[in-house]
Image (cartoon, rainbow, N blue to C red):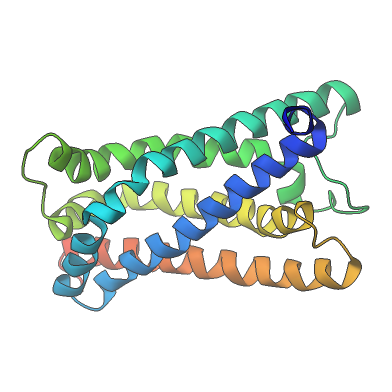
Length: 220
């Protein structure tokens, strides 16, 4: 078993499974964020749900998933660069590297990771981390408007969401391909689903950011 996970196929499998786990988290996260478009009370209720003990214990698992995904993405990318020259991302399906996203997955991942750290200092550090330290967390609605009250910060976030969109358009179907959905019929279906899912995530996060920006500046 250990030998399998040290192989190239095993590394791809680990990265794909961790990626699917993070995709599930994104779906939950964008759903909670979208509640802010309904009302401040709805968003507060969603944040209260995320603060429940059963959800809180998942945070270290989520962090581990991010670390595993990043580590194995780095290992595979460096291995591919060494073995294949200009090939940047490990794939096994002919023609799968034609898209911009497929050729730049590692770069897109670095952008996503970089702004993620910035994001954590704005929200997680002032909410969940404070609760772990025994302090009172900040009001999520207030944090939302304080953060996105700056048009510059809002633009940075939208660029982040765009990088995430590109990352997901390839990563979504590629992960399923790695775990076995690798025939031509499924690949075509999964590529369509990848664009649909990535667009839902992008629009959900972007709408949340823009609405908060407009409210903070007295436009909405």
